[in-house]
Image (cartoon, rainbow, N blue to C red; front, side, top):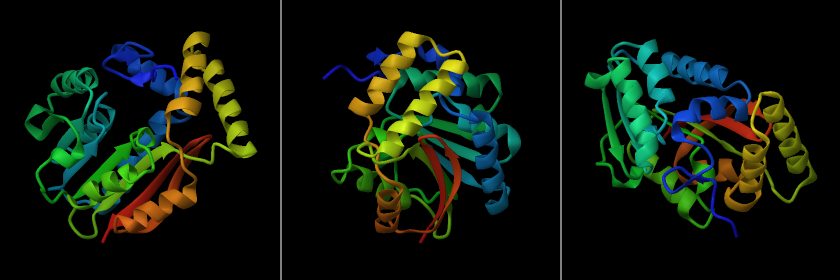
Amino acid sequence: MTKSPFDFDTNPNFQVTDYDIVVRQSIPGYDALLSMVTALLQLELTDTADILIVGAGGGNEISVLGQAHPTWQFTGVDPSEKMLAVAQSKVESLNLGNRVALHNGFVQELPLHQFSAATSLLVMHFLPDDGTKLDYLQAIASRLQPGSPFLLVDFQGDKQSESFKRLVDGWQQRARTAGMEPQRLTELANGIWQHLHCIPEERTLELLAQAKFKNVVRFYTGFIFTGWLAFAE
């Protein structure tokens, strides 16, 4: 099996400084997705919100949310040193440093602080469904106040189905039209089949329930990308 193109520290498909370009070529309506996340959190949170950003490397969630609300506090965690450095640079350029704490590592390693909300954008599909996905969701749930909103966005679908293949083909065509380099697109497409642990929506909902999340609703769909809003019990 080839090395994963999604290892941002040792085997990246692109330079981390190009992340903002590639993510918009890859994810339909990426900026709209971030605005939807912002809107949903604004509906639920107070001025004193303390938000956990899981997979904070790249810094886009913190940048958008931090500018949208001047008093929210953020804790970000990511295992990629290089991606976290990109996030730190954005935090500094936007003068958000007094409201942001970044940690290199995994969410399971964070203290059991009770956050007001959490996001996980484009993270869980890297984890196998052998108990690792459930452990990940449980680690987030255990760090949320009861009733706190949780926003999850992932690759989603049954890799064995014709519908999934059709959506992957559509995703490739759209990324090509958006200007993604052919070699990069081929490597990323191969990476979806070989390295990402996509699961059907039904399985995602089952895992969320097992992790003690409730009132789950889908709020975003873009080919093989799907977003859900849930609440901690």
